[in-house]
Image (tube, one colour):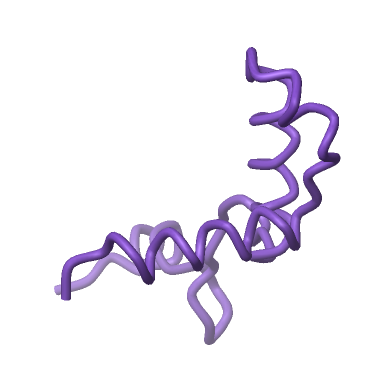
Length: 71
């Protein structure tokens, strides 16, 4: 029933299926990017002077989620 050429084109010739995509981003790197974006786009001068880091952003996010997320 199967055509060997079509099967090889879809699944590859090795035992494992090939998976492609973008490399994974670490959680702390995502928070660093979020902090950088927030500082560069905010109109609040006090927030720019604080010097947000990825760790600070992660702590702020966690605090927000604890306070305002509905169970």
